[in-house]
Amino acid sequence: MNGSDYNLGSNFIRNIIEEDLKQNKNDGEVVTRFPPEPNGYLHIGHAKSICLNFSLAAEYNGRCHLRFDDTNPSKEDVEYIEAIKRDVRWLGFDWGEHLYYASDYFEQLYEYAEMLIKAGKAYVCDLSPEEIRAYRGTLTEPGKNSPYRDRTVEENLDLFRRMRAGEFPDGSRVLRAKIDMASPNLNMRDPVIYRILRVPHHRTGDQWCIYPMYDFAHPLSDALERITHSICTLEFEDHRPLYDWFIENLPVPRKPQQIEFARLNLTYTVMSKRKLLRLVEQGIVRGWDDPRMPTIAGLRRRGYTPAAIRDFCERIGVAKSNSMVDIALLEHCLREDLNKRAPRVMAVLRPLKVVLENYPEGQVEEVEAVNNPEDPAMGVRKIPFSKVLYIEEDDFMEDPPKKFYRLAPGREVRLRYGYFIKCTDVIKDESGKVVELRCTYDPETKGGSAPDGRKVKATLHWVSAAHALPAEVRLYDHLFTVEDPGAVEDFESCLNPNSLEVLSSAMVEPSLRDAKPGDRFQFERLGYFCVDPDSTAEKLVFNRTVPLRDTWAKLQKKQNK
Image (tube, rainbow, N blue to C red; front, side):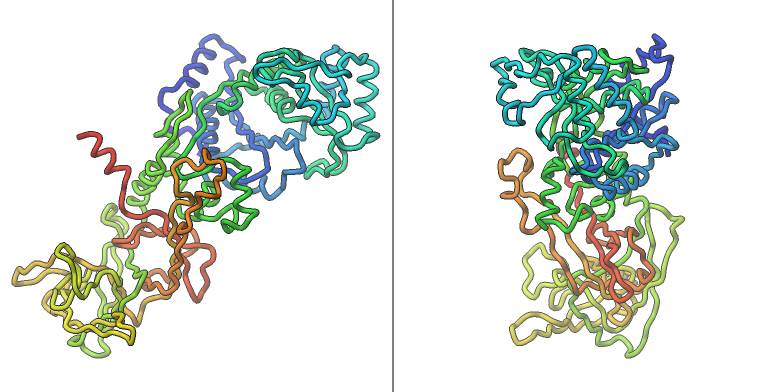
């Protein structure tokens, strides 16, 4: 997939592109790019940008580049690069031969920096980082010129070349653009464009001890790749004048247009890479691919599908102002997708033993079960039925309230695809906990209906004790207890202590014996589940992807009344 089947709908970015094409701007080309910094894993917000950039290019017969803006080796890692490539491909997009790195352009960027120096538009500054901040001013007060701002071109060139040669210690000097220390936009107050940093780079090794800053390398990398529309999120809007200043003041092969759109904010989620890294480094989660994380790797491990994520990105659309999207919409998109594709199976998460006293000893029969009622082509399967079964603990109550219709002493219920059963006795342990039920079955009710027409009010799922496979099931909830944890000063204070519950004694039907990591199923009555990579030959491990209850659909139904 290259984005052509992703429906963008009408949006302001598309309108800009169509107007450019009418005027034959950029020779009628549309070239976009997805430019992540390789300093962390991608999250669901990046998925929105990926879908947008690749899809716009495909819609207008253009191309989309994948470029790593790898200008800060102290925070970057090859692990992140490989993870990002894997995630983009998994979402269904392909950059083809157009894989690039900002580090590809380090020599050209250095030459551009010398050009600015020669034009009197850049200077070497000896102020410390703290002094630069102090000289910068505030939103209400202009900044002050650096005492080194008026160095001659010759002195600046000499110092900058010696910076490259490694003559000065880290942090002792920087190269700054000479723009306007009184500008109302703080980004234009002589920003730093090069710093000394003796850190080996994952691609260039020890070749460089000075590295360009993001705001310098990013627009020029776009220009060198002949990008036409540089699409980014709203936090870069204040950086656009600086982006344009570099483009206008250097002999670049193309002048890209920066266009900002609203980033994705999701309830009960943080999107800051810095905060996500903190969760990983402090061991609050089990890694970048922890199923509670909003990373694409975490969503994949939890059981999300690329189609569901693309559908979600399409539904939320492209806007100019930030807003908060309810995570229930993302879950709704997933349910709609999995409802069509996930096989139905039976699993018991908290097993309660049931002995059918009148079922023949040693007899095993097979009952026929539908794999997916939404897709008849998926066919049917056989499930073993025997004298000893497991049902869910909470499907039985010894003293049930009025509206509890499941199993209770003397009450009859239906077993899914099986028989009517009636509870005749309750076995408890020394503490008084119910550990076993004695029941009878009606052999005339095979398939779930009684010839005499009697009805029951509940249908329970079950597994045969002798044939069930042991499983561990991990039940996930939101990682945070508040809707907007990003707005909380100490975001860790609102972590959900119940975000993960591990059930180690679950049982699943034997048809799952060959299930592989990544396989998704609907556990009847329980939700959608995915096989986790932690699974072994001895024990399957499942992650609950999403419960069956669709809060988004109910909310929409209520609003439409």
